[in-house]
Structure formats: C-alpha cells, structure tokens
Image (cartoon, rainbow, N blue to C red; front, side, top):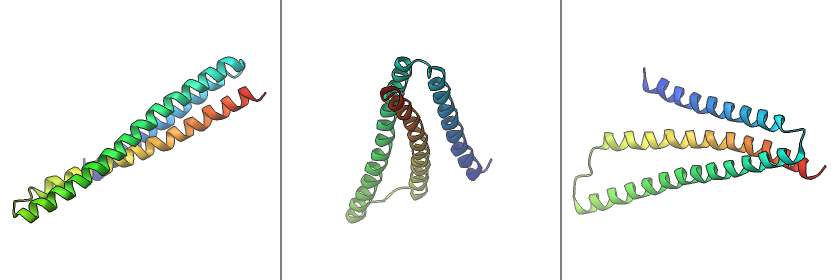
Length: 129
C-alpha cells in the first residue's frame, strides 16, 4: 500500500471514529430525552468528556510546535558549530508524521465540536423548559 493511501486510510478511520462518536452521543442523548434530569446529567458528562479530549488535542498541537521549534533551533546551532546536521530524510519523515498527527487531531477537534454542540443543545433545552 502506498504512503498516500495509508495516509488517506488513517484520515478516513479518524472520520469514521468521529461519526460513530457523534452517533453514539446522539443516541444516548435521545434515549434520555424523556427525563430532563437524566438528559442534563448525560449532556453534562458529555461536555466533560469533550473538554478532557480537547485538552489532549491542544497538547498534541503544542508538542508539535515545540518539537518543530527545537528541531529548527538545534539544526541552526549545529550548522553554526560546523557539526553534521544528521539524516535529513529521517527528519523529513518525522516532520511528515507530525503533520499527519496534526491533521488527525484537527479531525478529532471537529467531531468533538459536533459532540459539544449536541450536548450543549440538550443541556440548554433541559435547563430552559
């Protein structure tokens, strides 16, 4: 399997997991729609879950930026000292992997926003009826 197909399959898998997550959230919220208290509790737990996961996405993005900055700075220091920079192909592969993980984190973020909207709407309706 070529790297482009493998990458597309990884993105597709993230989308599939996100769709399943949104569907499970919608089914759970619909199952408890008859009882305002239970619906509010499930929606609140869903918002807590989304908050925890969004912190993870933020950490992924932060670590990517930190590692990229460190790589750039350390490469510059090594060039100034006249030292060997290292295997450029290996570094390119690592940067490519970091990009793939960033895109996956963004896909997760989109579906977390959908879940957050669903939970927020149910919580709003439960509290304002």
